[in-house]
Length: 158
Image 1: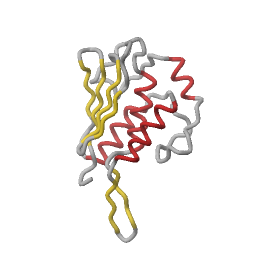
Image 2: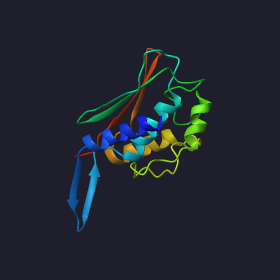
Image 3: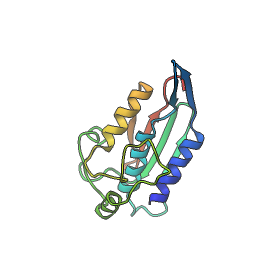
Image 4: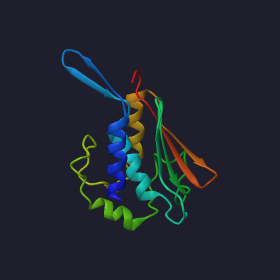
């Protein structure tokens, strides 16, 4: 599982654009918040529905947005409207393992020592960090009650 997260973050770093300005020192503005994408990928790995056979987490980057598809509907009574306010765990064993797995040295700028903290603050981090960078709130959509799509918008002027 940690390899999936590391590979997704490496893909992000390799393919996102970074705008830089000098004012008076160099200030970089990445296309996407690494902290937000890290939280989104960890959530996808931890909370996807592994009983949906033949399905995969899918990660796509475009000039104006990033899309992350996660197999399965939302767990328990969580809805797309309440996802930022509620916490539910579909895969207790996986989330427990991720709370004990240290984040690899190759993943930086995420503000975490372990892949998951199980406090229910992942979605608020995704929303706040992304909105701060792009000016647009990320959107969660449930597709056919069988797949969750998260759209994170690119930074302004990226």
